[in-house]
Amino acid sequence: MSTGIPYTQLPEDSVQPNPLLEQLLDSSVGIQLLLQPDATIQFINQRSCQVFGYQRNKLQGKSWYNLHSDQELELNPHLKAFKSALESHKLPPKDFESEIQTNDLRSRRIKWLCKVFPAGSNSFTHITLSGEDVTSYRHLINQLQQSDERHRNLIEHSLAGIVQIARDGDLVYVNPAFVKMFGYSSQQEMMELNISVLFVSEDKWQTIQRNLVSENFIQNFEAELLHKSGKTLHILFNAVLRNEVVTATLLDLTAQKRQEWDLQLLKYAVNSGGDEVYVITRDTKFVWVNQRACEFLGYSPYEMLNLSVSDISPHFAPDQWNTRWSYLREHHFVVFESSHLTKDGQEYPVEIMANFIEFADEEFLFAFARNISDRKQSETALRQSEEQFKRIFKTIQD
Image (cartoon, rainbow, N blue to C red):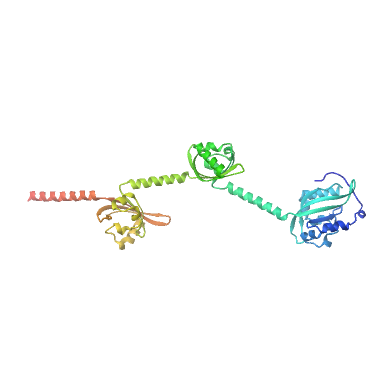
């Protein structure tokens, strides 16, 4: 900005070239210009010519403003202040930046240092402009700003909860996913909290703090935290400590933990039941069996997974397998009787309930087999009793 200090512009014939000054300017590795008080270029050094892409005789005697586009002259407030100061006979700004248009119509961002050479108490003979090409630097700054903006967008739209925590536990930043994870209405509402109130056990937060102080980071730490509604969330916690601020990412494992629990419950129920359970592939291999199947057949789980249907089914007909598989694919469920053969060669009758299932683009047979030896013995006894009764009844009639 102009300092407001007036000066007296000397007559043009009093502004004489200074060969020694011009020689010094020409030997500089930086951009150097010598301007008359009306901004006419009196001298421009070789480095400036290289940067701007002009020969010296094309610029000397021309206005320094001509190196700028009309848009730059109109919109750059520092350039307008420089021009206004010279026109109103006041000192120009000491430092500023402007966009120079080169001979090949490219733009170069120049940082200028302005110095006037006084000829008395309130006049000067000329102005020197020392310039530094900061085009690459400004471009880098813009890229960093854009990168920061992209990172902010990634954080704001991340599905993981991201939080920054002061050393005393106060929340200084939370992303929208973090707010949604804990059921609060806004980021502002959450940032009024201390992280310790979210932990079911405050000892867990203290453990995290101790680890961060000693290691500066913590990985895959599981803890129970509280939803606003009061329900417990199972959270996976990863954090780093930098500059007295903890930056953490939180993943909600509650649904996963529930699925794991449900799966364990299902396995327990299936293993604890009285029926043998088999999961069979299209090529008749066992991919999973329950404990009851192992107990009935006398094999270990490892041995069972190396067997196929023909190893435990003495009446298995390989040539009918594809037909039965196609039938199951169409009808999904079938019940039939068969028999199983134990490891020590004993055969026992079973009733099989077979279900066709598709999982992860693969086809499986999910089969329940029930030992019906007792039922068969009862049926045999009943049949023998009926036959004996028929013989006795016939004898009486005769």
